[in-house]
Image: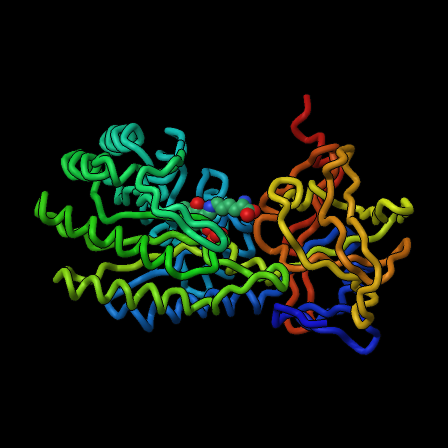
Length: 433
Ligand code: LLP
C-alpha cells in the first residue's frame, strides 16, 4: 500500500504504524474511536512553511497556523515552540492559546462577527493583529479601544473577487461572501480611508483568504497581485504606504490518489516570485508577508482509529461496515462528501478486495464516513483507520446523540501520550441543570 504521509508505514505483523507506533496496540491501549496525530509531521509542516517565508521574504514574514483546523493546548505549544504565530477565530480559541502562554503579539484574531466581549478580550491580552471584517466592526472596535485606553493594530479583510475551488478559480469581481469588504465596488477603499481616520485604530495592512483545499498556485498568485495592486492604489489615493499583507491559507492536501497538491513550501515560492515581480514593476516596497495555513499543517499528520461492529451485506445493494464513531468525530463526509483513504489497520499488508460503505453509529442515515470504497475484507473487531483526519475533524466534532468525544493521542518516534482526554458521561451532563 502506498501512503501519502511520511508518518505511516506497515510493520512485520501487517499492522499500520504511525509515528513509530503500532495502531492496533494504540487502539487496544487507549480504546476507540481514537484520534492519533504525529508530532513530527506537524513540526515538519510548520518548518517547511517557515523556511519558504524566510527564504523568500528577507524583509520579513510570518506563518500563522489557522488553528480552526485543529485546536487544543498541545498543538498551540508545538506551534509556539516552532516560532510560528496563530490565527484564532473566537474567544474560545484565543482563551485556549492564552492558557499555554502563547505570546499574544503572535496571535491574529479573525471572524466575521466578533462579539464586543471578544474584541475586549483581544485588546486586554494585546493580540498582535485584529483582522477587521466590516465597517460596523471597524467602528465598534475604535469605540471599544478608546474606551479601554488601548490601540488596536488591525488588518482589513478584503474580498478580492477571486473564487477559488479545488481545481479551478474564477475572477468574479463581486464575490458572494459573508466575509470581508468588497474590493471591486470601492467599499474597500472607503474602509481604508475610514480606518486611517479613526481613533484607537492603527491600520497595519490588508488581509485576504480565497478558499480552502486549493491545489493550483494560480489563484494564490492572482490574489497576491490583486491585493498588491490595491496597496499601490491606496498609496496613490491617500499617500499611505501599508507595510503588511496577509494572504490567508487554503493550500490543498492529499486525501486520496486523486489529489495532487504541491509540496508545502512551493506555493509560497511561486507566490513570492509573483509578488517580487509586482513590487519591482510598480516600485512599491515588498510588504511583510503573513500566511495562514491550517489544513496543510495538520491534516496528514492525523488518522482516526475505529473498531468494526456490525457488518451487514445487502446482496445486490451494498455492504455496510458499522464503526464505533462517525459523523460526531468526523462530519466531513456528511457535510461535504469529503473523500478519504480508509484501510483495515490490522490487515494493512493485504490488498483491498471488498467494497464497503463505512457507516457511523448515529441515528442518521447520512452518518457515513465513506461510501463504496475498496477495503481489505472486514470482520467484527477489526480496526479501521481513516487517514488524513488531522484537520477539521476533532475541531468539528460534536456530541450529537450524546456520544462523548474521543481522546487525541500524540505519537512521536515510537512513543505515545494523551494530549486531549476522552470525554466521559459526566462531561456530557456537566452543564445540565
Ligand atoms: N484563514 C482564514 C481567514 C480562513 O477562513 C481559513 C479557513 C484559513 C485561513 C485556513 O484555511 P486552510 O489552510 O485550512 O484551508 N471546515 C472546512 C474548511 C473550512 C475552512 C475555513 N477557513 C473543511 O472541513 O473542509
